[in-house]
Length: 100
Image (cartoon, helix red, strand yellow):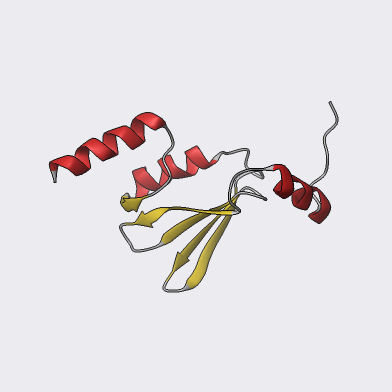
């Protein structure tokens, strides 16, 4: 299996075959920062007060979006969450919402 370097052309070609949207809102943390997952290049952008305050390249550190979600849950927590690390987490969050 060959490893293809990440270039504009390879990211663009993947975008045409990948059925995920380019940007997915992960959620809003307890400090009102929005966490947005950019799927074509596997990065997370943290936006606070209309400014991007942080860009995290998941592939560089061999992490996945699920690792980021768990990190934010542990460090800050989410006020609202739209993307979950597992179906179980999504289900449990839905059940907790029914109790409110």
